[in-house]
Length: 447
Image (cartoon, rainbow, N blue to C red; front, side, top):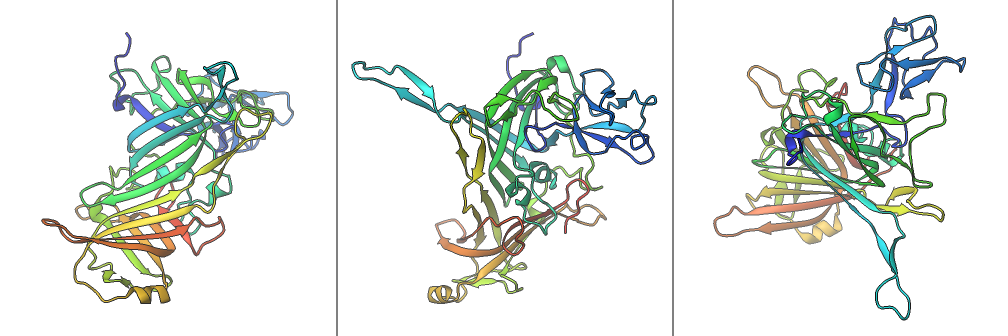
């Protein structure tokens, strides 16, 4: 029966590993199994099989070309190999609230004298594929899946800046009509997939306000967009940027096909720190914001406003990391072979608070003593009866400079102050300036 519509019930969002042109499975061997004995290294990327060290014997997945995270390898070296498995490296983005995607073909008209209408409209530059999605903050697992560092000490964008976690494939899975994508199993014949190939994050925004859940908005630009039927057996949407061809085969010692298989969507993250995975969403009442002069514990106190942890009436914050990119093209290629970040890349935060007592302060003093500020936003787990709240997510912004401070007052409304700060995205090895994220994601503890 034909589908009449698609609603959010039927969709789930996944992100693949980096690089976008590589395998989307990993061979795993545990302690005490036969993997090491048979020369199977753990942690290598594979798809359908792995060739043994002698180069002649192939170890195949049970079920032939059908891949799933639960299947194991059946070997032909001295019999079956126990304790060896395949990990599906597609990671679900949880608590998704909205997804939109579009593509734009940039054309150039070909005209000539003697003819009013164009001869043709040719595609001369790389098409633009855009994916936007938003999700509620519940932990830092989504950030980890997107390639952010969440240890609180390394720059949050270090792995993106050094290209180890920059380029990924994104997948929108759609299951049969009337079935929840979460807990609905994997039905290969009634599953459709939209793939965004070679996706690069161009914007990351985290915001929260009184009366609303903390939310993250992400924008991704890709090189390719494909529509698939079936949950498995399809080639990944990644393309070879050098010549714009599909990634279908790979030349290496692992195997020669690069495919993906959609896993079952789950309600909560698996493998995350106990007690945090089941949080439905973080709450505005569990957020604290500390704004101090850089390297000190002195609270922000300038131009008539004071933001101190105990008494500040913070109403909202908005953190934005802008990673706009320029496609780099070359003769002989239909696609950009890279989308590099445009530097300097701005990092901004805007804080809204209710104005209380007017403090002292002078613009002249601000110009003469242009201080920098450290901002820490700490989000704890929701309080529970008899339980202890945990630090689930922290945003740490270091050496931010004051850009503007504005007051608003109107009839019937509380007087408010908006303070805007900015810095620039730092290099991967810098630890004294820029954005840092500390959060609970998988086995990572918040600092």
